[in-house]
Amino acid sequence: MTQENLVVCSKCGGVNRIPAARRAENAKCGKCKTKLFSGHPEDIDGEIFDRHVARSSLPVLVDIWAPWCGPCRTMAPAYEAAARELEPHVRLIKLNSDNEQAVSARLGVRGVPTMILFYNGREIARASGAMTSGQIVRWVRDHLPSVA
Image (cartoon, rainbow, N blue to C red; front, side):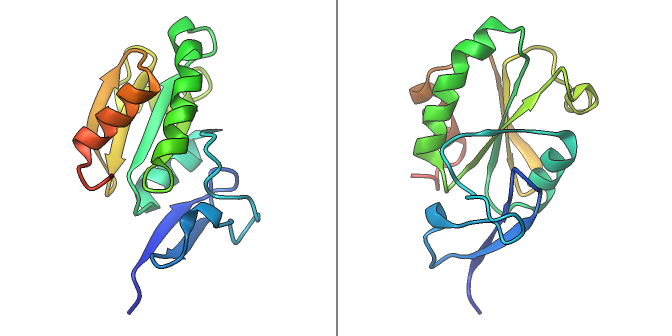
């Protein structure tokens, strides 16, 4: 039996099976043909967020942000740089708290930016406040020692 990862497409929400032996960096969604890992975290809706957390076999890091938030805008390039370093071992996504107020409330988000790290469908770490790309990568690796 071959080992495989389940990766959710941030564009269409399709769940993709990627054999562990295959280079995930080049994988495309079987449903919409979008590249699954681009080094650019997609801003997703609540439904696709829930699918990422529930169905992905990879750790999922979500940046909960708001367009009016200065620290959120400041951190956006650092989060993107962290995605280029952490993908395809960790899935990085973004969730606009203004557009997805119900999801933010369900998660207990009290301020933005807030990052939450999920693995196997449950929250394993949370941090609030802007970080540099190095701090984001280090924080993820501290909580997921298997991510080199």
